[in-house]
Image (tube, rainbow, N blue to C red; front, side, top):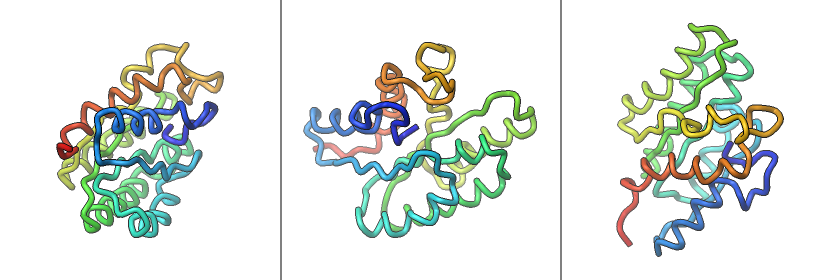
Length: 174
């Protein structure tokens, strides 16, 4: 979602966030370290060098959806995300977790465990949480690409607003 799959990266919600921060004369810059199709294990292998290279004040963690779509064990995803959060916090970054949901065809036990993982991690690590990144988009089929998974360019401002509500309190005044 954050890699702007199927649309211009400049029109994705992450780029729109960067534009908004500039408009608000914020001292923050946005580094989009997203890789389309990546799982939590891939993110875990990349987090340490990314933290060292960019030294972020805030890490927006949007990973796990591909774990779920592949039916990977929720416990492993949760362990990977926990390690990413721990490393981010140890590096001095505040963490905003972006939760995701799965379609019901994955079964009620799996989908419930998957969705709960994000809230559990936010509580455990006292991190900010967007419970469901696509809350304002999911019921509008016209805001999805033909794959019915990835949001269109028109959906990106709505996604940004969902993130902004939880990110804004984490920002220091300019």
